Each structure stands twice: as C-alpha cells, then as structure tokens.
Amino acid sequence: DPQDGDDTELLTKEKPKTKRPPMYKVMLLNDDFTPMEFVVHVLERFFGLNHAQAFEIMLTVHKKGLAVVGVFSHEIAETKVAQVMDFARRNQHPLQCTMEKEE
Ligand code: TYC
Image (tube, rainbow, N blue to C red):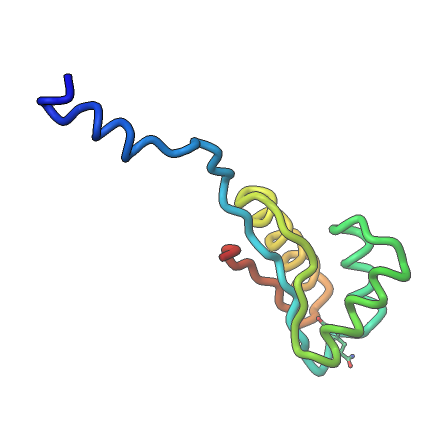
C-alpha cells in the first residue's frame, strides 16, 4: 500500500546483500636483531611462500620497516600471528607480527 510508506521503505532500503566478511592484513615488523634467515624461514613455514618470495618480503621489511605478508579471515590471521609470535619467542628473537583490519 503506497499510503503506509512500506513500498518506499522497501525500494529505498533494499541493497544487494553481497557483503563479504572483513579481511585482515598480517604484517611483519623489522627489528635490528632477528636474523634474516630466520625471517625467511618463518615466511616459508607459516605463509607457504617459496624461498624467492620469502626472501623478497623479508628484504622489503628490512628496508621499509614493515610489509604485509598476507590477507586472511580474522580467525586465520589470529592463528598466523600467534604461530609467528610463539615461534619467534621460542627461538629468542624479538620478531613482531601484527594484524590490522583491511579498509
Ligand atoms: N633487520 C634484520 C637484520 O638486519 C632482519 C629482519 C628482517 C628482521 C625482517 C625482522 O621482520 C624482519 N638482521
């Protein structure tokens, strides 16, 4: 019924419901102490990168201060961060890994 406003409401509020879940960037931070080979190993082990890709990202972090290693769902991103932080701590390296919501 056009008199009660419902039709207008429907026409104006209907949006295509194609919202994807938010994604999270997982980032590695540079420091002065973690060996380059250790960072390369982390990238191969936890992010499935080949040696060349891992070396390239490690160098980007080393030169720029940080780099995005991958983009994941919240749960996967949290797992990656925890795995990297735990592995670094167990090996007594100060390597830092963080996550941030994508825009
Ligand atoms: N800057 C470190 C070094 O010179 C190497 C390094 C790279 C450390 C990337 C952390 O996320 C990192 N040994």
